[in-house]
Image (cartoon, rainbow, N blue to C red):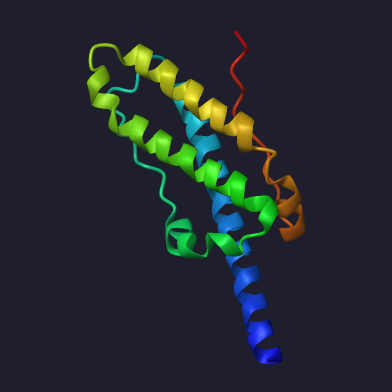
Length: 142
């Protein structure tokens, strides 16, 4: 019985840590991507957009119920927004001839994710001994 409980605890802890590590990596990648987007003077033509990958979450999705209760909702929402960004990237060719509009929509979407989630996981990151410091500049409010 003790071995069973200890095994379940280790699965719970490793799942939480793995998902949080991937969220941390995605926040860093999306933030650095936002900094790159800001360096482009025009649209994104000629710059392929690579979807943001998240293999840990996909593998652990069946175990999402064993995440800490306080993490389930923000984690699911975060990955849902990452999926939205990936779908927006795939729509880039539809903006041919209007690259500036796509860049504005895309940049605003990146900013929304960073604004909404850059501090959502601070407590968990602190527990893991990591932190996320945003490098990109938030868009001014309209």
